[in-house]
Length: 206
Length: 206
DNA sequence: CGCTAATGTGAGAATTTGCTCACATCCAAC
DNA sequence: GTTGGATGTGAGCAAATTCTCACATTAGCG
Image (cartoon, rainbow over all chains, first blue to last red; front, side, top):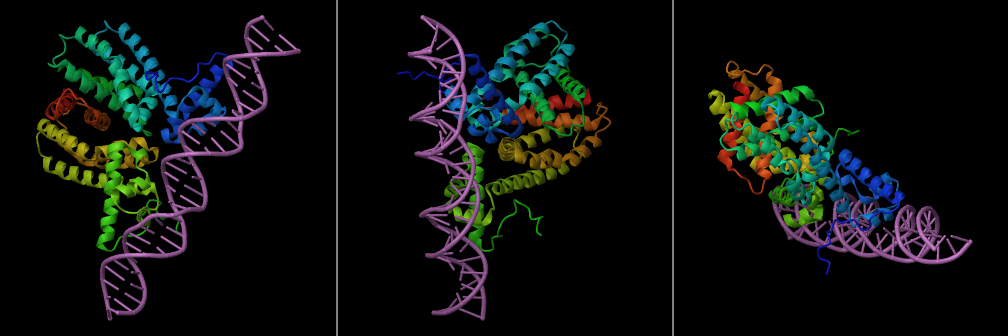
């Protein structure tokens, strides 16, 4: 029995170029619709319509609606994760305060680009909460950030670094997401990064 | 023309006691289902079923599925808001640090009780984002919290209090919501309140 | 009791959803 | 050019969903 066949695995791997284009159109359409109107609005027929392909083509490559979403999440997690990982490694030797400011700024960028997918899908669809809960950029990068903090362990006054990291992670992401969600923000990117970084730095070192 | 008739307004106001009970059953059922299985699972038939009333009764009092949800949101906003407002007024003269710790603790309680409704509905259903975006407990209480901070203006080093409040609000709520969402938290209530309060206090006063 | 309005019922109409399948078209290799 | 597999199509099925409506039941009141 092939019980191990991932239920989200693509049905067919595109081999010709036009097939690749089809798959890409579907993913892009799905992402656009979900970002703009939410998961509910992303019916398979609508996705196929926006993608400019027939519903049949859609089901040729994706076994179910959820498989499309799973592909989106996976893509976002991988890309955002990899990008942040590289960024962090480059900054590994930066001074604590400057490093934190850069990291927060970078996180804002990444959340702006991929955040909607994470937020919408991870929270709207309970089913995906577990996926992104385990794979969310932050957890994926736990080790890297942990390493950065350990690098500056002597400057950090907080006793329990693990607990602090949990709080910090959600403090930062919470503020960034709220800022991005806000239609009429009372501050701009630079100010947000400044304030959030300040809070993090003070929390860790004072 | 009655164009101003709220699209979420109840169709009929219950007058007899059994009708009140019916309405209440519907709201309770809807709330339970949404909290446990999310918005998608709360089909009108299912809600009526769980409530123990017929689908016809449901539509006698609520013009649409969204009207039920709107009623839930409104109720949560009002109750949570009023509760927090009273709490804050009582604490208005508390010392800054102690006051903040109590406020964060209170916010954790309130979010635990009503947060699922806010989070699920506000984020899952784009349509309700605007409602709760304007009515969310925090904004509703903006003035009260602002007054508390002004009470301690001399201890607070942050220059722009409005900006700081925006950041703080989402910092705190972000961390609390993440904590409540987390299935296997690495800290407990007291520790969370302690850490979050610490961050707030340091951010404001150092 | 008898009457009326309030309340409750649930089959099913109308629509939407995810998804299939029989068929048409395209491409690459010989 | 022919052939076979890869790709694309869209009518339409089955199930689910929102909501209506004609009717049944109940409560309150003279």
